[in-house]
Amino acid sequence: MKRVFFVALLFCFLPHAVRAADAQALYGKALDWLLAAQHPNGSFGQVPGEKEQGEPGITALAVKALAQAPAPFRAKARPAAERAVAYLLAHQQADGSFTKQRSGLSTYRTALAISALSALDKAKYRAQIDKAVAWLKSDQFDEEEGVEKANPHYGGFGYDKGGKKPDADMSNTLMALSALRDAGVSTDDPVYQRALEFLRRSQNNSETNPGVGGLRPKNDGGFIYDPGLSRNKSSMTENPDGTRSFESYASMTYGGLMSLLYAGVDREDPRVKAALRWISKHYTLEENYGLGIRAKEPKKAAQQGLYYYYYVFAKCMAAVGEPTIATATGERRWADDLVAALAARQREDGSFRNENSRWWEQDPVLCTSYVLNALDAAYPYLSK
Image 1 (cartoon, rainbow, N blue to C red):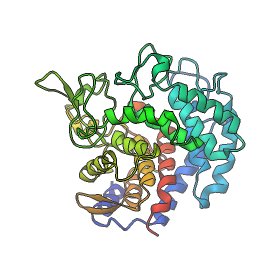
Image 2: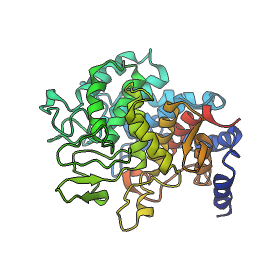
Image 3: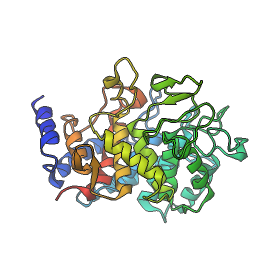
Image 4: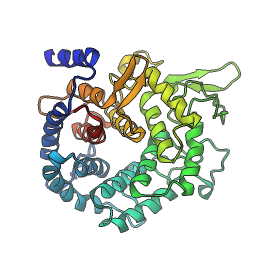
């Protein structure tokens, strides 16, 4: 408790007190823990209820973190990443996707595998990457699946295109766009133009989003999970005219901004400016702000997906490319703030775990992999 209190004080009153040395100590402990968690077959993670060791998506997330480790840790991290690749490649299917039986997570797994292989050795794994990219492009909801532009799911990505109906969401979409960027797909590719339509409809910005399918966007500039009105009932408002509105929340807003930038949208674009305004107003690393805002216990609900949020937060801020971010309380060094927040949450053994088990975050391998990826992105922006 004393340690948590001390770090909290640093975060509140000494925003520039965190330095690269603090991040290095935190990173080293987390890395050592993750390396010890690697299975004999090279994989990481475990599917609940399955005897077979390893989970392709978590393995890919770990590989990406290890492949991009900062210089002080590269010699230790790289061999573990190399050992994990054989397991990962064994799960690439004939159609190019990465999956497991009864997965329902083909988009996540394929996107993460593309990013992992691209980070480890893009030239060596070019054939496998290209095959996966072709599958991922075909996974987008568009005319080929009978999804016309008027459909709220058009241009987005869901859990698996083999689903019985379109179910695109911002989380799968931002993972897919991140993978395509990592693979080197040009922003001129039509896949990004279609995705921009889905991103536009997922943003609470009435200036650029007129609403579709019964959705009336709020006007705060943030992003929601999806414009198809199928989820986030706890954050839904029924409007007098029969339309519905949904609350923006942090992980989707940072993910939405990151996706806009990855798709080649200019920093002066009104969609980017609107997202930055939301971030400025609601900047925090204490919770996944806005998630479950209408729930019975909103603060508890806002702890859901916290480590996923840290992962997306850092990737987004690195895409913006500035060491500071304007907030309601002034300029913040976001990378320093991230390290302070993580230091308060790191367990004694070096790992991270969310007490709120939603979205598998009870798994310390997943959470620790999120953290190392986040730190990889934040490292160049830390105070020296």
